[in-house]
Length: 493
Image (cartoon, rainbow, N blue to C red; front, top):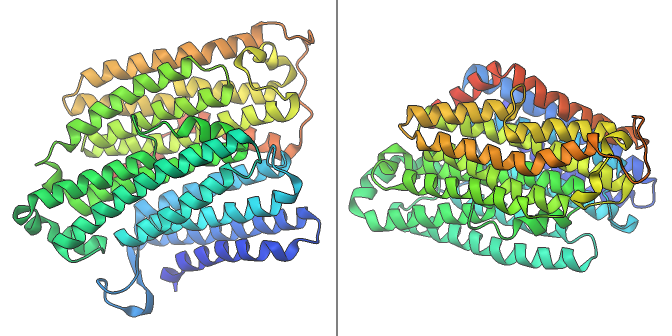
C-alpha cells in the first residue's frame, strides 16, 4: 500500500489541474483553497513515504507488474522522496504567497489557467524524480518544459513572448541532446531502465567506449542547458525576470534544481564511479562551474533591473552546485545537495520579497530601492537575510553551503576552488550590499523615516517571514540536514 502513495500523489496533482475549470463560475478563492488542501494532502502522503523509506529502505513500484525492461517503474529511495518532500514544502509556501499578489501581472481571466499549469508542473517534477526509466524521464521533462514556457508567456507582453521563444528553442535543444544520449545508451545496453543500465554499463563500457562516452556527453549537456549551467544560461535571465514573481521563485528555486537532480541521477546512478573515474567528467564540470560562478556574478553586477540581476545570480549559484557534483566525492555531493536546498530557500525569499515590493510600489530598478527599508521593512529584512546568505555571511544557510563546498574542495585536493569561492562571494557582495545599504541608510523620494509594517496581504507577508526564518534556522542548526544529505550522497556513490 505504501508503495502506491507516490502514484496517488501524482494523480491528485493531475486531478486538481483537471477539475479547476469546473470551478470557473465560483469565487476563485474556492479554487485556491481547494488547491492548498490538495497540496497539503500530497505533502502528508510524501511525509509518510519519507518515514517509510527512512525506516525500511528504498522501494520499487511497477505498473501492471511487468518486468523492469518492459514496463514503467518508479524507484523511491531517500534521495527521491527527500527532495520531493522539500519541493512540496517550498511550493506550499510560494502557493500561499501567490494567492496574495494575484500572480502579479496575470490577467484575471488567466488565473484558472495559471493554477492549472502550476499543478501540471508539480506533477511533472514528481514524475522526473520518481521515475526509474531514462525515456520516461525525457517524457516528464517535456511536460515540464511545455508547462514552464506556458507559465512564462501567460503575461501577455512582448518581453514574455520573446523570453518564452528563447526558452523553447534552447530547452528543446537540451531535450533532444538528452534523448540522443538515451538512444545511444539503449543501442549499447538494450535498456532504458536506470537500474538495468547501471548493472550492464560496466561490461558494455569496455566494448563500446565511444558510444558510452558520447552518451554521457549529450545527456549532461542536455540537462546542463535546462539547468542554466554556464555557458548554456542565456535563456534564464529573461525567462525568470519576465515571469510573475511567484513563478520566478518556482522556476529559479525549484525547476532548475530538478534538472540538476537529473544530472546527479545520470552521473552517479546510471554511469557510476567505474565510468566517471575513466573519463574527465570531473575536470570539465569543475572548470564550467568555476567559470559560471565568476561570470554569473559579473553579469549580475551590470544589471539595472532587480529581477534580471537575481536571474544572473542564479547562474552563479548553479555553478556552486555543479562544482560540488564535479568533485565526485561524498563530501562534494553532500555540499552540492545542501546548496540545492539552501539556494532554493534564499532565491525564493529574494524573488518573493522583490515581488512584494513590485506589488506595492510598482518599481523594478535597483536605483529605486533607496529608503525601501522604511517603507517595506518586512520585505527588505527578508531580502537582506537572503542576500547575506548568497554572499556567505555566517548564521545563514549560504555560509554553511560555502563552508561545506570549501571543505569538500580541500578534501579533494582542489584548493584553488576555495579561492574561487572567496572571489565569487566578494562579487556577490558588490551587487547585493549596495541595495541593502541604500534601502536602510538612504532617504527615499517620499522621505519616510519611520518603519511600519507594509500594508500588503497577510498571505504575502507570512511566506516571507517563514522563508527568512528557515534561512537563519538552517544557518544556525544545519546538523540534521547535513547528516541526512550525507546519507543520501553516500547512497548515490
